[in-house]
Image 1 (cartoon, rainbow, N blue to C red):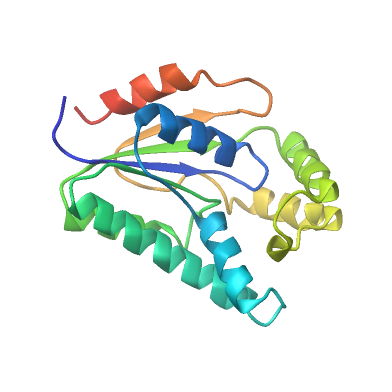
Image 2: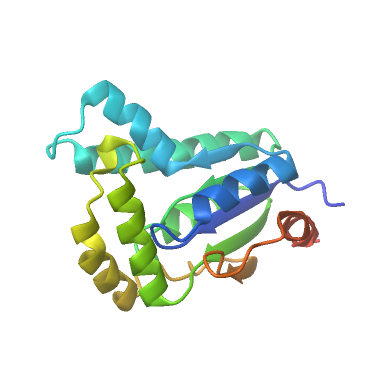
Length: 186
């Protein structure tokens, strides 16, 4: 087994099943789990969630995520990060993490058929179970479709192995995924 820390990046569009998968995978791998949404929720609790803070909270949550991930990796600790990372604007911070340290990188991309992803987003938004700071609304499904079709949440162009999954229509075997993730980059 390699002594290099592992950076696991779980990404994909909203409501693609990535958060649940990431949490289960981090537990199976026994590594820290960092979620942009969880950072955002704590920031909303401190600063409120009116529209004026939304963009700053988003930027702050990403900055915290990349900073904590870098600190963990610097300490030789593998880490799993999860979010609907943007295929354009969120690639460079990952490349910088990779350039600045010796590590193994595995990206797990949760995707699926556009219609199913949009439908699942609308269902989740309508259920009202997420933190109010996310301001999810079923009517946002049209915007989610537009961004999916524009490729905003496609796999990131990163070094390392890419594992593509559709966890909305097929259950993932987390133990098998953990084994595959551990084996990457050896």
